[in-house]
Image 1: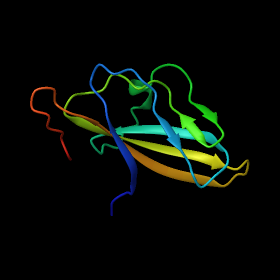
Image 2: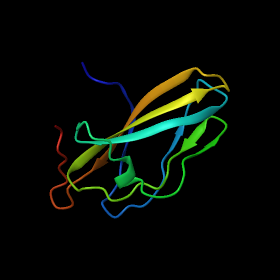
Image 3: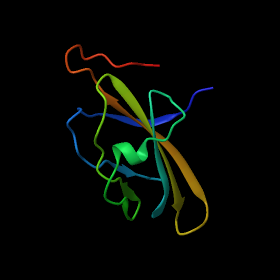
Length: 110
């Protein structure tokens, strides 16, 4: 069984930038957790690819810490869990970051 990917973005290996996610179904969200998995692995690499800063929220938009230290030819899945509309209700979404190989443009898919 696979996961439903809410969106994807291509970043280069030298990128250092936060990503923003809008949760259209809600008026406000709060950050519970943001985890990162490389090439479908089970190890959370969030502290490696988001080593500094803080996630932030404005209304229904979550902005991650700056994402960096990405490996060429790989993909990362961000697992984002937020609380919604000031309640304990949670929403869990997945987002893919693609980092193409700089020479071939290929990305490992498994």
